[in-house]
Image (cartoon, rainbow, N blue to C red; front, top):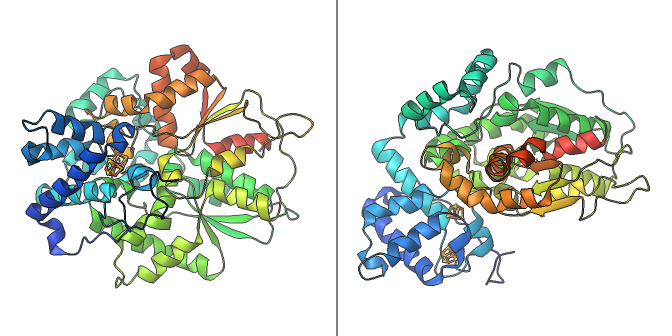
Length: 458
Ligand code: SF4
Ligand code: SF4
């Protein structure tokens, strides 16, 4: 729930095709207008590092007002934004329909789009965010790449830090020799013909992370649905474009949106639901593309249909539980869970679906539900922010922003650490490691659907 306003926020399309969008003088004027409102308001002081940086700039300016802050320093504010959307969705009373018309994250996006058009994206960042190519190439030599990118490999990681600006201490995704798509094709789970949700048809959008780095999340989700009678297909036409969005490359995002939406049309035509396995990707399919793909774009209709057909995985399982009831077989799990609700899951405005899902696990043999003692929910930014959080100069900030979440995980002392966002989960684990190495070693870090599959014995 957003503070300070009773009206639901409205998000205007990003006007990226208008030449004024890239006009630096107009951008500067808009940043000064928005930053001045923020300086007077300061509600978002503890959401991320962008706002503290902005308020520091103002407080240290000669007049202690925005008029004496130099425009060249605005980049410090922009650089710290992970595009988590939390200021827009949970704090700001001045978002549309308010006449102040503030959309802080999309202003940060506009600044990056202007910079990307003017200077291009730095080579190393550009290479790192080509997730599809990286996944395909690295998957062929997965053990070598995983060895070279492990944080314990000081030699290679120091070289990567020097050459590519990737912080040597930041954990990076591992790659797998066989993608989720390949595993699902070769070894699909047996579908329970009498499962309660047998009438449903669903296709997974594998997402770059699950497809190339952690197919186990997809296989867990597919097994849960199969146990409940849902036969699923798995498809991965291309990345959702979130890594490119972070770099302000809006045209590339729109291209990917069209490609993915066209690909899924054939399933949607046949009545399939589309399930995204990572919240950032679900957010792109459900909402963000609608703000970016112009209304006269040839793929606009397909993007709109995909938006309506898309579910987040935990949302889908809870939907089955509510409409058809879940198949029996859930058993209590020892040790309890600290569950992080990712910003991009919150931004989908669907409630805490991962928490609702985990509460369906019985806590004891009598069938009581997983109670507050077993499940601790932490709803705060992990600080990670996709490719942003692993860059040198950002990683320490990312750990600082995520420290309250890591502290909660230490305090809760549960066996499982779970986040709907697998990158955030690993980042929080690294935060726990800094605070309490022994506890980090005892934690099992999983996606909530992996924990749910385990409770099913799958
Ligand atoms: S990081 Fe999130 S809360 Fe902070 S400015 Fe960016 S979108 Fe807003
Ligand atoms: S984004 Fe909105 S709520 Fe946050 S500091 Fe600015 S004006 Fe205040």
